[in-house]
Image 1: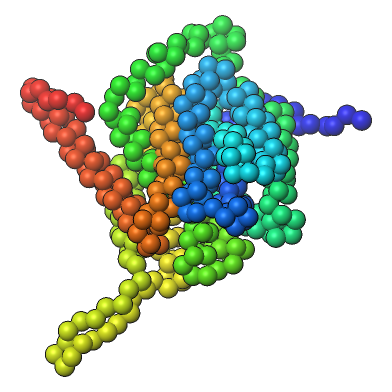
Image 2: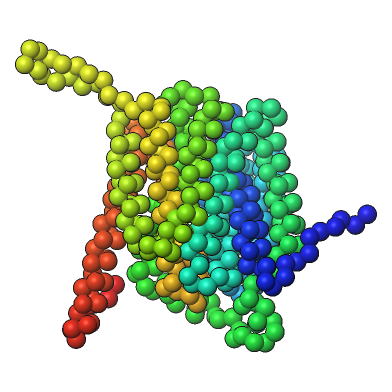
Length: 433
C-alpha cells in the first residue's frame, strides 16, 4: 500500500508553506531540544547528581545546538533549507532514540550532545524562511517562525505525564518518533527556496566561498547583536530548563505542577515572538530592544531579591519583618519577563537581513550560536551559584547583570553611531563601530 503524501507547494503558495512547515518543524525540534528540563529532574534523582552536574546535563544539548548553528546556517545558504532541515531532524531523532538506552551519567552526556542537534534547526529555518520574503516582511516572518520556541512549553506540558505514566525513557522514545514523522512531512510538503531554484536553473551566481560567507564576522556590530541574543534567547532557554527545578526547590511543587508552571513562562516567551516581529517592522527593532532590556532589568532585579528576615531599630525598639516573593507574584513577574524576552528575540533577528542580506545564514548562525551558548552556560552557572551561595535567587542576580550590560552597550553604541552620522553630515571624520 502506498501512502498518499501531500504534493510539493506551488510557487505562489511556497512562501506561506515554507513558513508554516518550518515553524511546526521548529516547534518539534525545540520540544526535543529542551527534553532534559523534565526528564533531567528524574535522572538527577536516579543518579544522585549535584546541582552543577544537573546543570551540565540539561545544558549539554544546548551546547551542541549552539555550536552547529553557524555551520548549519552556511550549509543552508549553500545547499538549501529543505535538505539541511530534514537531515538535521533525522540525526537528532537517532540520538534521542539512543538516549532511552543510556544508563550512566557519561552515556547520557554523550546522547545529550546528539539531542542538541535539534536546536541547530533554528539557524536552518532563519536562512530558509528569510529567502521567501521581502525585507519589509522579514521581521514578521521570522517572528512567526520563532514561535516554534513554544516547543519548550509542549515538553513541559506533556513530558511530565508521560514520565509519570511510563518513565523518562518513554519520553525520549516518543519525542524521537515525533522527529522522524516531522522530517518526512517537511520533506514532502516543502520546496527549495528561490535562490536555490535559480542556482539550479543557472540564473543565479554560484554559492559564495566559506571565507566570503563569514566576512561580516569581523564587524563588532555582529557580536553586539550576538550578546543581545545571549540574553534574549539564551536566558529564555536557560530559564525554560531551570524553572521546574527552581519551583520544586523554592516552593515545593511536584514535578507535574512545576512543569506546567514552567510552560506558563515558556508560552508567552514563544508565542509573542511573532508580535515582536510585527512591532519591529512597524516601530523599529531598536525601540523594541530598548523596551525589552529596560523591563527585563526591572523584572530580574525584583526576582533576584531573596527571602529574608529583617530587624530594624525602631523608636520603640526592634521591628522585625519578613520578605519573600510568593509563588503567584513570582509566576506573574516571570511571565512578564518571558513576554519581553520574546519581543527582544524577534527584534535582534530583524537586524540581520537588514544589515547583512547576503550573509543571513552565516551571521544568523553566529548570533544564534552565541544565544544558544547562553542556554548552555547559564544553567551551569545557575547550578554553580546555588552550590557557592546557597541562594536560589542568585540566578536572577546574574541575569540582571547581563541585561544591564546589554542595555548600556546598546545605548552607547547607538549614541556613537548618531555622532558618527552627524559628523559625516558636517564633513568630519568619526571612528565607526
